[in-house]
Length: 240
Image (cartoon, rainbow, N blue to C red; front, side, top):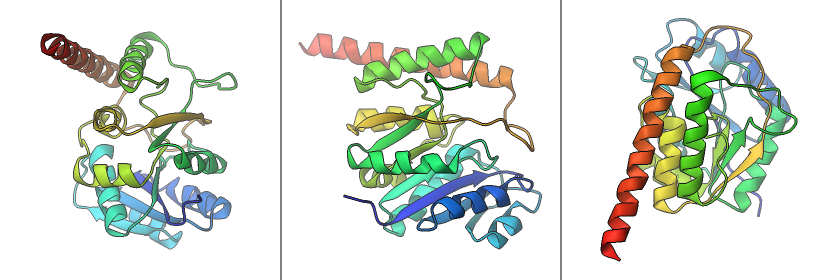
């Protein structure tokens, strides 16, 4: 059954150089969807450009991070009775043509994660950041009992059950929109699947966190998930 009411959610912080093009590309490929840009405390003209390009804009008074911005998007979606939310980056790194796969696969699951790790991908991560991502992948895959190869991907979709869950319970800390939300979804019993996606290089602006900071946080998140699983396994063993 096709989903009829779809929201594209774009968290944006100082993306004035790219946000207009991202919105236009989405509208060209999927004129049937609604687009919400959550302006995450930008100090440039991001909200004005987004509105001129045809998106609805929700303005946050200060920068809260992607998790906080997506919490706003899911609350908007729940109140607007949307059946699907697709998270898209504001920097132009995601391919609009791949929205179709993220939306269509929701007929068989609750969350679809676009994985950057597949045979045709040129995306590559090395060093401590890659090690932490592998640990996160293995941990979440074990929790979900299905492969989760790219838990930090920000190109993903959520169906009705996930929208309802995330409108009430969505982690706002760094990586909450990726690793944290997947952990909550798995523990709630939602079904997760993946689909291959393309990752382009950022043409404008800069990431909100540098590579070293991201690697350190990924390592911390990995250890927290491992401890969580160990505690759960110990509890099950005691009960048995």
